[in-house]
Amino acid sequence: MEFDYAKREWSRGTVYVPVVPISLNGFPVGHALVDTGADATLFPMELNQLLDVELDREKAISFTSAGGEDFRAIPAKKPIEYKVEQSGFRPIVWKGIPFFVEGQPTILLGQYQCLSGLKITLDAPRRKMKIQQ
Image 1 (cartoon, helix red, strand yellow):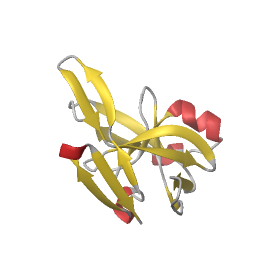
Image 2 (cartoon, rainbow, N blue to C red):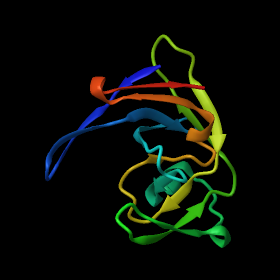
Image 3 (spheres, rainbow, N blue to C red):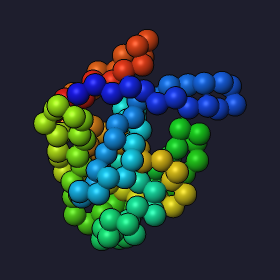
Image 4 (tube, rainbow, N blue to C red):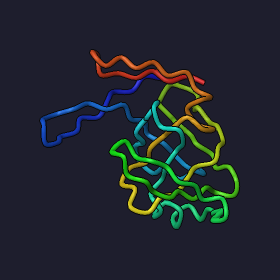
């Protein structure tokens, strides 16, 4: 499957970022940012309420953001199902443990039990990303 990067505006102009349309536990939630440098997959805490995922608060861990700020993330107790779909292709489906974070504005797909099982080719000059299982 091949996807176009998403156009984003910020204080220094326009950037293009790799995103994929994603469903979580069968529920389409929009686009997720593919962050190959992130250790884990991070979801906004509000998604926990929508997906009705049981959290393992005893196993919460600290992360440090790219900006150097520390934050706490709470893992799901059980793996969830991730699904990426595109017309004309078989869906890519896998399971893994995400982490939920207060104040996290974006669904961020990271390495642990997520991107580590996928073959991803980033083509920044063309603003395209290819993803395979």
